[in-house]
Length: 164
Image (cartoon, rainbow, N blue to C red; front, side, top):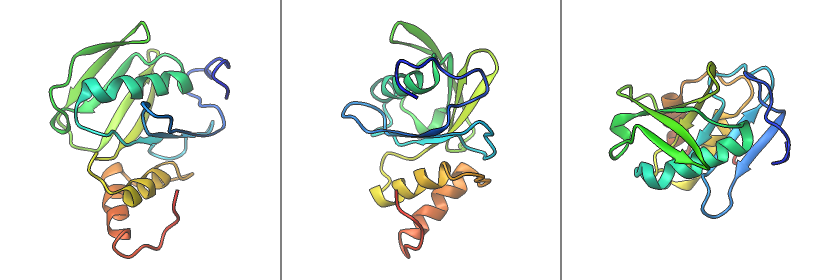
C-alpha cells in the first residue's frame, strides 16, 4: 500500500508487511492481512519510556499505514506520565491509560476498529526485539504479548528461531 493509497475499510488491513525504519520514525512492524487470525496485529519497539518523544512517531507511522488513529491505549505503569491526548499531524488522538501490564498497545481507528500491538521494552537487546517483532506478526500467532517477550528473550540465550 503506497502512502497515497487510501486506507483499507474498517476492520481490514491491506495485504503485505511493513517495517518503518526511517530515522526519527517509530520502529514498527504490522502484519497486514485481511483475516487478522492472530492475537496481535503488529509490534512496536519504542526507544524510551517518554510518551511525548515516542508517541508522535508511532501515531504518524500508524496513520501512514492504517489511516487516522483516534485512540491509543497503553499500560500506565510502563510509561513516564501519559498525556490524555496528543495532536499529531493536525489530528487529536486520545490516550487511554490502563494498569494491565500486558505489554500491548491498543490502537483504535474510527469508532470500533481496533488493532493490538506488542510493545517491546526500550531496553530489550536488538536480537530479542527483532525476534519478538517477527513472532508478533507471524501468521496465526496465538501467543499473548508477554509470552512472546519471555520466549524471545530465552531464545537469545539459545538461539534457534528465525531472525528478522
